Image (cartoon, rainbow, N blue to C red):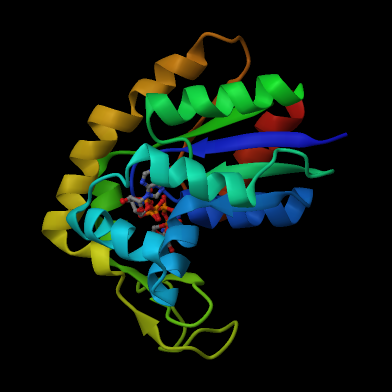
Length: 214
Ligand code: AP5
């Protein structure tokens, strides 16, 4: 049996942190459009150079670029299931995903909504450090040393974590991504709202409990 999940929430809510843990625990494929885009940027591909200007301004990368990138990495048919992190992020993307799933007869099990106050996310984002080599995510409040504990890489601040860009990313979330909450609220039991202001372990536990109950 497979489990198919979306994790949704504002910038810095902890989507990546939780998606990695849930994917590991449940042996799911983890697909993060933010990570895929950063790889494209680092490799200097045509998509990466187009995406970079939108990302650095805190805007969404246009839907057609995202959907063509998703088509390369995602067909919905992983045997254990998947968790989508950062996708869909607009109503167009959500409708496109619904079409893909409907066409293939695949069911979405839960949309995990990380519920958190803007003040908490700002402090998380400004404290975030990422490994320049493997992309592992840390926070200055809990880091041990200044190198990546996974691969020894240098820990850096993400290009789009500057304060004015973070503010813009928030506005964009409110306008373009928040409407997805209503889009997915129609189906009973699909939306799993979790208090994302809690500790990392506690949140993982709530998500795993919620999924099991669904
Ligand atoms: P993306 O990388 O998806 O960025 P985001 O949604 O803004 O989310 P973040 O990565 O900032 O945060 P997160 O929720 O994953 O939090 P994290 O776990 O790191 O996208 C970047 C850009 O790419 C977008 O702005 C857009 O331009 C483009 N893009 C991507 N997908 C797109 C799409 N589908 N369509 C169009 N454009 C797209 O945690 C944050 C920090 O908090 C870390 O330091 C972490 O260690 C810490 N932390 C996490 N949980 C806790 C906790 N419980 N307690 C204390 N600290 C915590």
